Amino acid sequence: MKNNACKMYSCILGAVLLNFSISVSYSQNSTADSVFMKRAEEIQDKIITFDTHNDSALKMNNQNSGSAMPRSQVSFGMMEEGGLDGAFFAIYVKQGNRGDDSTKIAERYANGQLGKFRQYVDGSPEASVVTSIREIIKNKKEGRISVVLALENGYPFGKDINEVEKFYRLGVRAVTLCHNSNNDICDSSLDTVAEHHGLSEFGCKVVKEMNRLGMIIDLSHASTETLFDVLNVSALPVIASHSGVYNIKNHPRNLKDHEIKAIAAKGGLIQVATGRFFLSEKPKEEVTVKDLADHIDYVKNLVGIEHVGLGTDFDGGGGVVGLENASKMKNLTVELLKRGYTYRELELFWGGNLLRLLKIHFK
Ligand SMILES: [Zn+2]
Image (cartoon, rainbow, N blue to C red; front, top):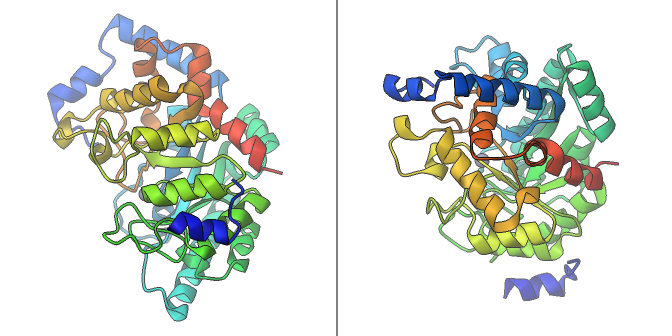
């Protein structure tokens, strides 16, 4: 029914070291492991490596204000240590009431946090906000971190299509359409009610406007109906910036095989999240980089290495034993090397696929 509505509106465009024995088992404690680590370092030095989702901007904003919040899992220094060249830093906006006043408050909040974070990055010699491939490559050469500004939840748009371009002008290049509840754009995977049965009429307009501007549409948190509506409406490939595989862990936030195949068929990317709830039923202290690699393997085997990457969700629930923060990224490369991943496969996984998608979007 919703699809019909969409068509009617001419939307057819198609850590903590929790357990000593486990952490020891994950440390580089043999000659073979140190050989893998050396290789991982060499590879990450050459290729461009990206994480497509963290919630660290707000944490960094608060820390810079002197708040006593727990330490962030991400800093530019930790990224450098982990051989991570860039990340999508999302401003997360909690879903609230959808009246005009509440939406305005959300818009002002997102605006303020974006400004604060942007100021912090602009004042940091080790990082810069990027909106072009040229800047990403230049940063890699000069050893600087690339920051892509993102918005997690399109709630601050309210029902005003002009807000999309306003956020674009603030530097935002990726938007997660919704969070854990429905909003005026679309239905969420974690809401109990199918309100729009996918995208709303306004949501169709948002997708088209994001296409026009070259903003990346992020389907993590979206319901299945939303996902297929977006794939129908969007002229450009999309990403799921931080999601796991439903067939391995039955979590409503994870992607079913037909969803993974549909995103890939449109040229999009499934960026596997590191939150343990998305990866495994096992207790916290037993979920490791190996579980994360199982999800990556699954997507690779289902739709090809050209459609899989990483979205850590650090500071938003992400992190497993062996990958507790951004300084530990090389442990994932080690695990993938052990599984036989080639240089070319690692190059695509870590950033090659994303650069292909950014080339289509960035002007
Ligand atoms: Zn999220």
